[in-house]
Length: 170
Ligand code: NI
Image (cartoon, rainbow, N blue to C red; front, top):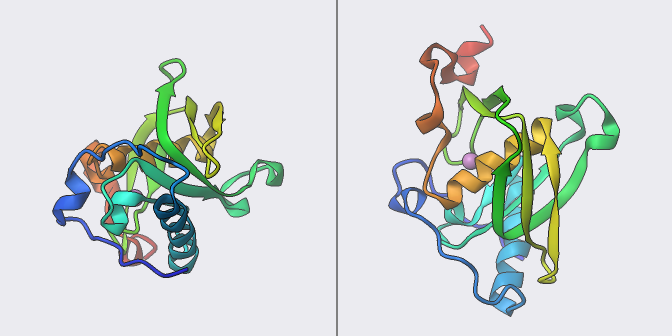
């Protein structure tokens, strides 16, 4: 296990389209996933995508913290999605207040689909799929954007709601 260095906005790895993982069960991917989970926990993030740790592969880890959902039953322990597909269900949108470990200190309001379907592989190479709403849908869309080289500021429409957290709580 190791803590990985997190790339910050401006690093080219964050702006490229990541490649699919060819062998999800390889020791290299197992180690990457394990290190990403440790790095996410250490950095207190809700999600972390492989390009954020300088690895341009289609992998992300995430969790749904109990303090981000109204019903504690909706909280989710850390998990991984390899080669994910995120598909909007319907066209209803929601506004999400987002931060990103690659853009420390800032937050912004981002429009996201209210409901998505997700598919991918877990750490054992087994297929997972399901539907997500609320914060779960939010984090899936944010992390999947990282795999396409998109950071949340690129999706902001109202820039009056984008700024440093320390200033916004004044
Ligand atoms: Ni991010």
